[in-house]
Length: 228
Ligand code: DX5
Ligand code: ZN
Image (tube, rainbow, N blue to C red; front, side, top):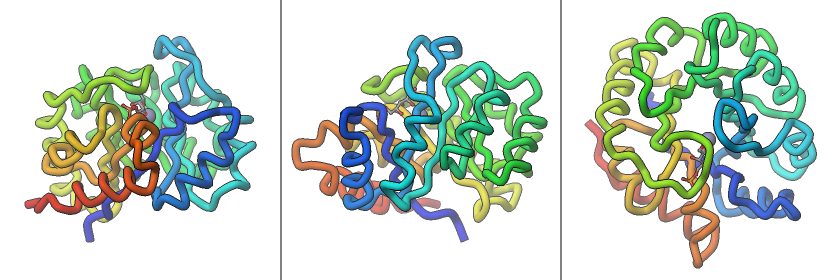
């Protein structure tokens, strides 16, 4: 059974003076999980939140937390984000010298692991670790900032990753997530290419009709795509 469509709000654009309220509102709006964009100012030219911020919101929602670790040293930070309440950690293939070991370590701490690949990175980097992950994140922007334009040339890569997952017989185990520029105008193309989890920040926080409209609209547009 293929993994379901999921909408995973990035809280990068949230009002951090009321982060708990924002997360509760996203849950009420029908979001499936919360996507934390963690940036260290080294791997990407931006610095965002640490594990204590995540921990401070854990009791405000029952939604699963996933941490998108855009950091140079995922081995150092992984335990902290698991302690903070993240059930899935997504590491960048480009930042992990020993990716297989890092993924095994995340699993040994009781979380599930995902691998993110930047626009320039070939999807072959994940071929040898499919048995250790439950998510592949194909970046549809260059990481570091919200509000960027969707890179449509990533769609052939999304399709190849989808075919790789399906050929390995892992379509019921591994999510294919996209992150960056996902909106009402781009989600159908990303779904057609094979994605099933959609990270969105600006599309949710800038919708004048609010979170419920934004989540429902994105979900319906993805569900309307007939996939092969
Ligand atoms: C990039 C971030 C963004 C964010 C979503 O490093 O990962 O992609 O989550 O940003 P929007 O949805 O505003 O493009
Ligand atoms: Zn992200």
